Amino acid sequence: MRVELTDQTDDSGVLQRLNPVSKLIAITPVMGLLMLVTDPYTPLAFVVFGALVTVVLGRLSPVDYVRVAAPLVTLAACFVFVYPFVVSSPGGVTSEVVASFGPLTVRRAGILVGAATGLRILALSVLSLLFVLTTNIESFLGALVQNLGLPYQIGYSAMAAFRFAPEMQSDVETIRAAHTVRGTPDTDGIRNRLYRMSRYAIPLFVNSIRRAERTALAMDARAFGASNKRTHYRTHTITGVDVAFVMVFWMLSAAIVLLLWELGALGTLCLPQ
Picture: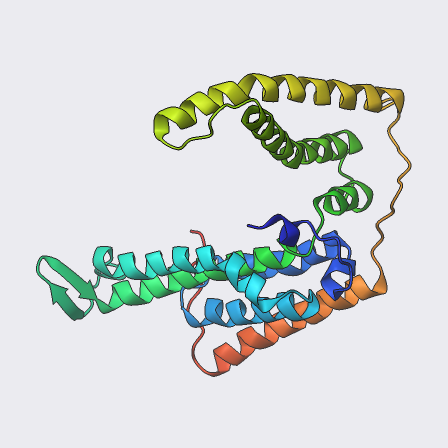
């Protein structure tokens, strides 16, 4: 997944301007429903619905969105392809044979279960992308601290940890460039890759210790952990727009479910025993 899609800096989209907590509240009940459905039509409807909401309200490029979602589609397609060969009957009742390939038998139940499982995974992933592609991780952690009562010690520690990942990637590029300047070849091959990892390990380890030490000193200088409450540079509040988005998202989701029920396409729910 590309960084420019997951780390949004353009707040022109409606989804980018929403409180991250409101987006999380909006998609959570729908994702809970999708984990219980057994038909392929409900997740397919929410795949289309979630993708449209993300692209239109998030003002994302459809091409970039398709590129990010392509691995998820491939994963769902794998379930659709494999399940017909491994699932032979629903609830102990043998279903009709659709096709045979030597010792392999494809049954109708396997096709339905595979389609439902693959599309359910894809629908859950698409709704997750609605949140991931339009939410800055620092804004999300800040909203959790301010709106949901997450202890700021946990929130800001997680924020510092998330910042380390792209910085370590930059360190790797810097170390690679330094080795290239000094005439160290950057060749391919498993043996060369392992040797290159060993050469990069010590500088990365030293830089990580230095960065962690600077972060700890900065947090200590600001009396981190000395008080139960902290002030915030950017405040996150639940506005009327956030409430409206959640209500409209829920109503449209309910309308999709009711429409499928009227059409007889809504299957039974797989409730825990």
